[in-house]
Amino acid sequence: MPVHQSDIVQKARKHRMRCIDEIREFALKTQLNSEVESYTSFYLGLEAIKKLKPYELDETIVGYEKIPFRNDYWRSSYFAVLILKEVCVLGAVSTTNSVLWEDKTIKLNNTQRDYVCEYPFYDMFDYGYFGSCVRPGDTYLILAGLCVEDGKYIADYLFGTRYVHQAPDKPIISNCVYVLFQPIRENKDCKEV
Image (cartoon, rainbow, N blue to C red; front, side, top):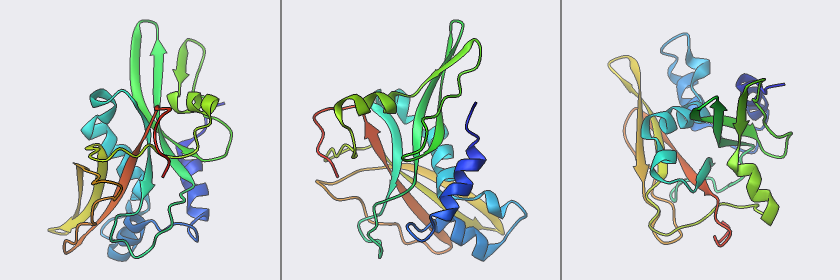
């Protein structure tokens, strides 16, 4: 039975004591429209991946995890939800998507009859993956932002770069808030964060 993304987001909200969702807090504070509940860090992460297409640019990326910026006042690196690469095949047609997965829960499986889905992230457990791949100079970190401009929400997505073993600084822009996502890679020789 497919796992519904809204169920995962609801479970993630229960973990608010462990992680702060800056995007959700900003949307609730500004309350510009009736869809304010849909604005979360992970929603913006999914949208950023659709727009930036990192899976096409680097085949070793199997997902993304939210991490703090270097200058964030909180340093918790634990988040209950990951964004995973999903590759589904129907006949000769293959599509690549991103889905939310709550860490340490049952594996996703959106396979249905002739529609077969795979999640490269799960293959990494065969050799003991439990951290993120740190690559100094990695240009596929994702900065996702939500801004208020002319009474409307404007989403902003761009790639960021990791310098040595440090995440970039959080952009400080009036009426905007940003979150950072780091690639999860299928690489046995990576250093763990």
